Image (tube, rainbow, N blue to C red; front, top):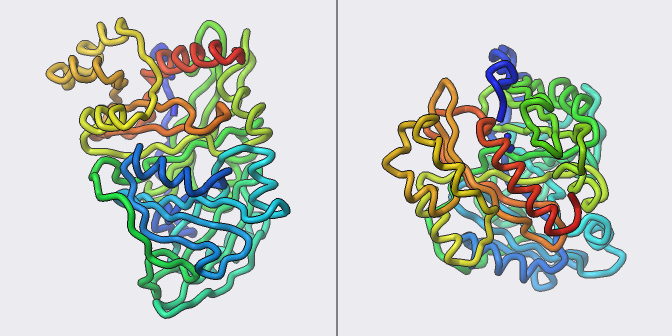
Length: 376
C-alpha cells in the first residue's frame, strides 16, 4: 500500500472492537472492466499464472458482455468486456480505461447484508435476487461505494458450479501455486474520511492504521491513508487521498487518468515471494525499480532476512517489519495503458502492517515512473 517516517510519525494502530454486525467470508471475486477481455485473460494466465476456470459470452447466451473467470489459489478475478458500444461496460472503459468495477464480498446472507447496509446509509445498486442453473442457486445484491465501484454481496452456499449461473466451465493454464489470496485492495479517493466513515457505519469496520502525510511523503509528493478492516480481519481496505506537496503525487496521477476515484491496486499474497517474482519477471511482468542502496540498511532494520538479502536485492523486493513480524513486498508497473491499476505481491511473516518503512523508497520509485511519463 504504500512509504518512511520517524518514530513520531509512525502509523497509529487502533485496538480491535467487538460487535461484527456485518459478517463477511472474505472477497468472493474482483471484476475488472477491460477493453479486450480475451487478451486481458490471456495476459493474466500467461504472465501471472492464473487458470481460466469459467466463461460467459455469446456462446452461453450473454448478449451484452463477455467474461473470463480466472483463479489462482483463493483469488478469483473476472475480466469483462463489452459486446456493444452502448454497453455500460463500454462507457465505463471509455471513461476509466481498464479498472476494477466490482469488489464482491462473500456473505452468509445476501438479503441480510443488503438490508443492513442500506439501513445504515449505503446506496442500493441491485436489490437482492436469486440466479439459478443446474448447479444450484446463488443470491446476489449490490451497493455503491467510491466512484463507480460497487460491492456485490454473494451468497453461494447452495451452489457448486464453476462460478455463477450463466457461466460454463472452461480450462486454460495450470496451477502455479504462486499467488494464493487477496491481502488487501487499495482505493484512491479525493477525500478519504467520508469513505472511512462509510465502511465504519455500513460494514462495522474499524480503522486499523492511519498514515499521515508526514509518514507518506518524499521531497516532492505526499499522500494520506487510513486502513479499515472487518471484525475478523479477512477484508482490509486501505483508502488513500492526495496531500499538498510540491508536485503531483501518485494518487493525483491516478485520479486524473482514471477520471475519478477507484481501486488503485490489489495486493496478492504468496508464500515464496522470491521464487514468485523471479518467475513473474521471466514471464514478462514489469516491476518498479528499487535503487541498490536501499538494501544497505535492510539487515539492520530486518535482520531475519539477512540470509536472503542477495536474492531480495536481485529481485527488487522491499522489506519491512512491525511489532508482530516482518513482511516482503513488491509492486508492478501499471498493468494497462493508463497509469492507474497495478498489482502488489506480498509475503507476510506475522507482520500486520502495510510497509510503512518502505514508503519513501516506494514513492521515489513511483515518482521516477511518473517523471518518465511527464506526470510528476
